[in-house]
Length: 113
Image (cartoon, rainbow, N blue to C red):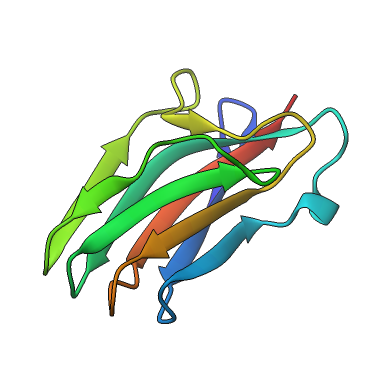
């Protein structure tokens, strides 16, 4: 994506077909001990009813968000006001539950202290 106010913005496609399932956005092994994943934009859609949540270091950092059949979820922030952040030194994962409720869309984020 490029630099925005000194932050190297990354965008990753989300294509999670296995449910229930977990999709690693950033692996724990790729994150430095003093680094977090700061999410500035999320767009998700699901073909079937289910839930999605985000985890970091094996712990929930959001509650389960209900997504209806053919429904979606959007959260938009910016580099000064992220919508979500991982725990220190840990990556970020998307977890979905529900029969056939895989998530599709994209996530925009940067890594920082």
